[in-house]
Amino acid sequence: MKFGDFLFPESRTPDTDYTVVNEALAETELADRLGYHSVWLGEHHFDGVCTYADPMAFGGAVVARTNNVRVGFSAVQTAFHHPVRLAEQIALLDNLSGGRIMVGTARGSAFNRYEYRGYGVKYGEAQSRLVEAERILVRAWSGERYHHKGKHWNVEIPMLRPKVVQKPHPPLIRAIASENSLLQMARQGRPFMLSMQPLGNIRRMFDLYRSAMSDAGFGDDAVARATGNCWIWFNGVVAETDAEAAEIARPAYAASMQHITGGRERMNTASEQIEVEAIYANSDAGPEDDLVYGAPETVAEVVAELDDVGVGGVMIQFRIGEMTWQQTENSMRIFADCIMPRFT
Image 1 (cartoon, one colour):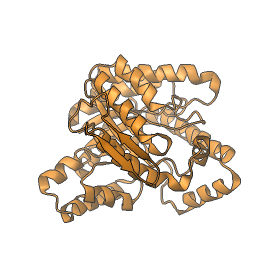
Image 2 (tube, one colour):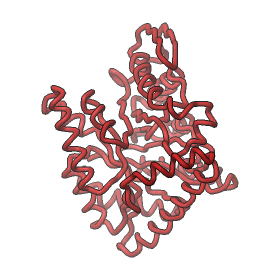
Image 3 (cartoon, rainbow, N blue to C red):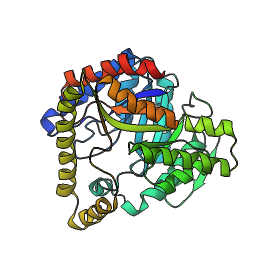
Image 4 (cartoon, rainbow, N blue to C red):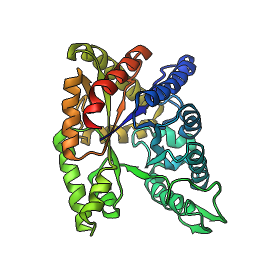
């Protein structure tokens, strides 16, 4: 099993942006020294929830400050990027890193409608932009002349430079939230990323994924390879005892959720927020479903169950809300020392 550090650093006010951005960069260096497989960069805008906002620019700094850790995107909101520009940026990062880049793609948040208005993109176009952008990325990385005429972009690429290092291209992983998206990935033989859910749900989805891949004609080896490249994300805090971890994790998580939902209520328009509230109402997600905390033995039990399901990688958001650098560092070190060696 692979273990990654998910950097989603929250800054409540502009006054703390500088500190948070630079502590996030220091966190990538720590993950590299501690032997994590990867660091994963998110993307959100205008609200300070993911303070560095631009994963491409921040990714350049990460690549320059690390040596071994792979650098993934979890995930690029493709609706906000021109796909040719994105293909070039990723190709450059792949060269600068010596082939350490992994590309997670996503439609974008269904909740943060203000992000779409900020970029002048219609929310209803986000999914079709994702599918079209992925097609352009893969063909652009092929190194061949490519002409694409689609719904959103009409481009003609003589040859993309620089050439990507990884063959045939950096790994492409789709972030999903629904069973329908999972089935799409299975039929294409592609891996996916998924946020933490009750373990019974995760087991059911992985079983469905393997079954759908087999039904689509993929052999056992192909199914195993694809599943081994699927990732689960959760907020995680590890401390010496369950009580200590709870004392850190639960207040930080609750305050972070309050900040996130408060931002949506403040920045979405009234009609947008009505749609968002309807999504909330129809969701079966429970409180703290994506929060894992405890002593090493407690957290290792959860990881062991994910391993048993066949999850290929786990990415952990160690810094939750306004947790201190000391709390984050301590959690990362305990996880690396006491949990990772059991599974790697």
